Image: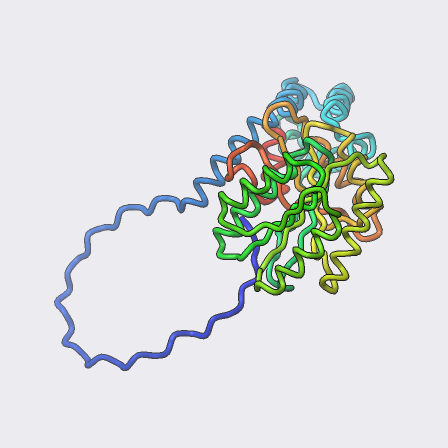
Length: 347
């Protein structure tokens, strides 16, 4: 589910050819039993079920639109209301409806049930630019700065990502740059112990200094990845946003070109407020990716459509969704797929 940069290993040396043996008599081999699905496929399948369950609120609202017998203005009006209630936003809703009407016309669909499938295709196409896999190893260490408001699941997401990286044999160092909140340092320390990775922490110190020391330590210790956890703050807290900019500049002084990733963690339950956070943090820091959390029961899900539509007007293109999470378990953080998300969104 994750993309990592790997150096190519040389092919194994050729072994000396064995003496030619006499052909063995032909014996019909018994049929092999079917191979079970690989563990990752089973994990992904179970996760998709939880994602669909988490988005059931949106799915049930949209599904009701297609229970009628006619494709008419009333159907499109109901669909418009359902998309707006799902936090898709006005711009994305208008774009989806225009695309859907074109698809219905081109396909000559007459059954409302078929329109649901066409809507899934339209949503997939809208969300496709948000797809991106995290690449580790093009710089050593790869420095990831993680930001977001309090309560979005920032530190927990860092812990899950650290576990995935550690399992992929990447050497990870954590920087506890939320220096003024003891609970945050303790939580990150628990994840560091659990994943057997090192952590740079300092009580009451300067967050930028901690980040600088962590990057320097990561370079000295040959780490593959350094992840800096920062203090949660609202984008309206301008003096605290300036502190994030200082951390970003200081990381760049410790290693040219860093941070290589600036990830914003957003709570999937916050609806259009999530889009406001993306815009504000992007304006301050230049985001490279999003982690959307808590899509596990009350989230409406349509906000990703709003983020994608806004991203189409962004000079650097959309801010991609690197991961989405549906719960507290390690496997509940997975890479984002537009097609899978569209299918889950529509039930």
